[in-house]
Length: 478
Image (cartoon, rainbow, N blue to C red; front, side):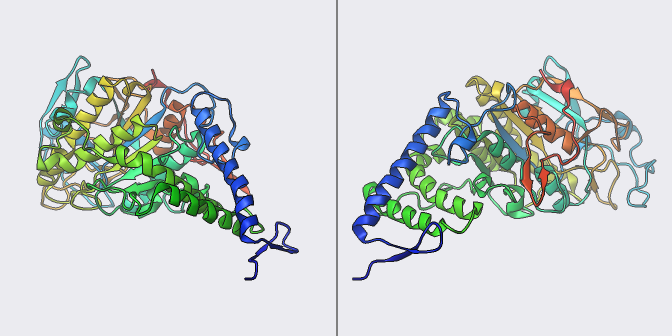
């Protein structure tokens, strides 16, 4: 039988290996892979290893400075929750309900629409929260409510991309990809960046992708069904899988030689190793079966209305607890942008709030009682807000990028405060406006990353998440 022929490293001559020689050389190669994995594990324990000293792209890396947060959970509410109906009360809007709005919207005159829900002060801080969120309101002293968010795009695709990638048109790396690129992951047996959602997502993988960053930093998307990751349990023994993977890896290495650096190919090869390691870690990490009945109730797993998002929130806690760096949760139950109420705002927002309020409060409580909230940054919000004016004759609101609300909790931000303000009706951010670029700069800062230094050279220029913009919102930091 003829020996197999492979391209040599220099591409000039053939490298002819019989099976015995292939296995002998492969053994040495996989010893090096094992060593790299051990080195990465040591880095988690505090060994000072730089990314350039290892072939493991997701190994733990030093931040630029001391970090307040180690990990992030982003609770994304697609469609745009209404700021004047959730966390930004407007008494004047209530008084002037039905009157012509002092501002035109897209060149149209519309009448003002008062909030359909009452607000009440909660906690020692006395922050106002609407009756849509009675459970989250009990955690208000942990919240830093930013009432002066602004963005550049009033449309869902561009707004979602801007919130996730810092760019509303072109394909750019997502926030989670930048974070794992800058910091790596603390668990080599799980993805560093996980996105969780039960249904389709507007703009799809671009919201959690890596774009021109190495493919190893893209998010791993899972559903929160009973089996979020399929095919983890193999049909052959681990020993047999290891032998097959060793042979496959050697062939992949030979294929890669002479083809230049291709992050997609590298990530594809690395994914086989990660999938093998995940078989021993992921089934336990992604399973909720071991949680107590009390914990299940805390997240609303015992109620049909809250079960789906409750599972997402509980899974997020389990993942960050096990070293996953960035977890992105999408509330997409019943549609890819459920908060988009152009009509029937009352029914829509009440349904969405009912599905998410208890799980979010449970997550904040659970993180705090486990000592995780102090170094886990939790973010809540959508791609924009909604107009203070009525859309049409129904009780609906249109898209609104000029002043809306998001909140942060844990991870080095001040709790029980409201930052910035919109005008008396909730149209424009008039005090301490926070652009999406500023939010991204602040998130990176809390993680110990300087947004101006976290760059990646592509197509002849240095790119960063915040492009040429962004200022850290220092007033909200502890």
